Length: 259
Image (cartoon, rainbow, N blue to C red; front, side, top):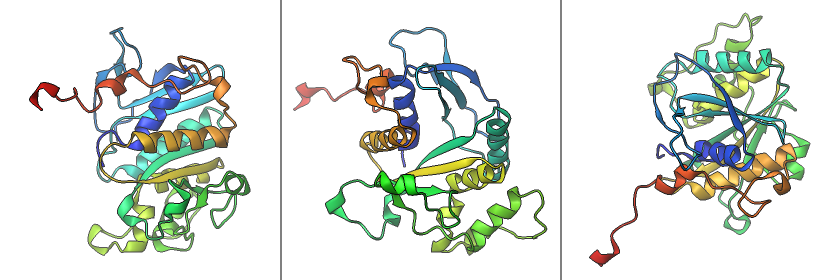
């Protein structure tokens, strides 16, 4: 995947379209450092984009967390613990995690349905959620709460667990271990352990321009939260507002005089 993955782009789209304001930065030592210009304004205002930012939208009562850099190798469990602690201590009850998946892992592709959003919820033990089903999302069928890696994640975040489980090394990972080895799985398990309702929204992406996937995830998150287009602050009202940073996301267009 490119650095501009669909999850990061989707959150940028939601922040921009809901006119959410940055209310703080989260300083987590488990994230790799990064710094950049403000992603939303056309003029330099002195604000910097840092690894983990928090935005709030007064018109939608939604809090958005934007993670711009990857977690340091081997530190995902600790990072998930910290984020879950932050959410719980802030009084949050419902959490949505956005994530992209490797398109090469999609085995049952149904082109007749077009791009599909998948979900994983802790509403039921098998990951199913009736609301997500009504919205047309597909349950992540590969989720198995009794699988060795999923059981490890449940135990490592459960303070009362007495199971002494270990996560397989990279050489020992099998195909069934792909999903629980991803960051969204650790976040899902950490939020679940803190008693929060958590729903992961997932889409399969390939390398290249992930902007269409970002719209897909952002629209899915909007449907799940009941956020309607009339709440958006697009140029014509009721439409998505494209983040200003997208204009230079893939560099300047080619000089057409060459052709």
